[in-house]
Length: 88
Image (cartoon, rainbow, N blue to C red; front, side, top):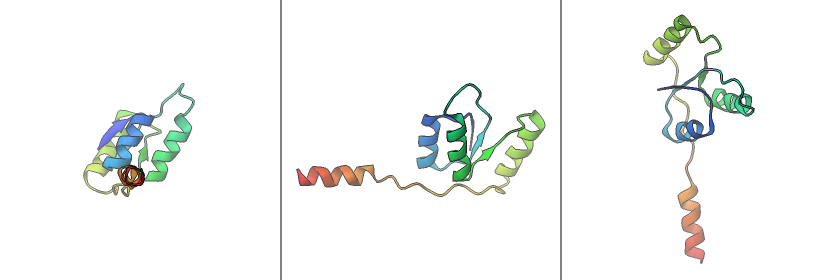
């Protein structure tokens, strides 16, 4: 489980590792709305209310297993590279 702000690096790691991600809003980052939507579409949780009580409640739900893990993302880059190398 990860508590973070939306960003490209954490999205890539989360897509492959499949942790449940709890997002806090990220202000002043132009791509934030798009990355946030990608996380939410993946099944992650956006903490619009980042108060300590709201954060605690969401963390408890995740730790109790009430929030399912997102589905895996196929990491097929190695297969594609192998196919190209074998052609050459």
